[in-house]
Length: 135
Image (cartoon, rainbow, N blue to C red; front, side, top):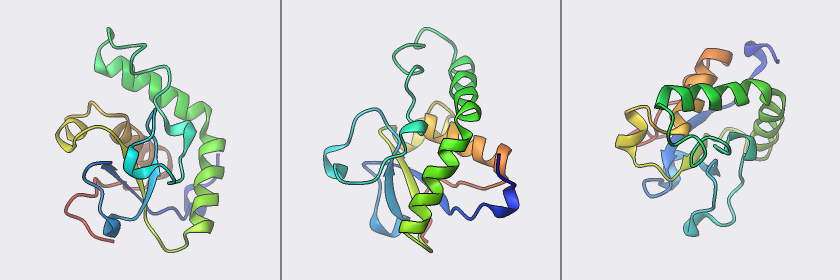
């Protein structure tokens, strides 16, 4: 894994429905594309494959643990994809999007906030929820 001091990603999270251009470059992280964001870049390794739908009968903490374990396993791919997006959109915030409403995300039941917590734990990067925050 890359040393956190070498990482230069600017990240935020938001729901598709709440995203505004001033929140940053929209980046899909959900299973399925939102009709308004069919041409946006995606980070496939941040998608919650194998969690939502598959683990719905498990407690939220177990779902979160499974998702973050996969992020640990795929950290190198995540780094490469975010490095590529950062090179494509220098000095821009990459806004990681999914379907969940803000209230669901802030309750800790959404993979985009689980990813935000993972970035904080692994890389020391704060990844805020974008609503109400401008670049």
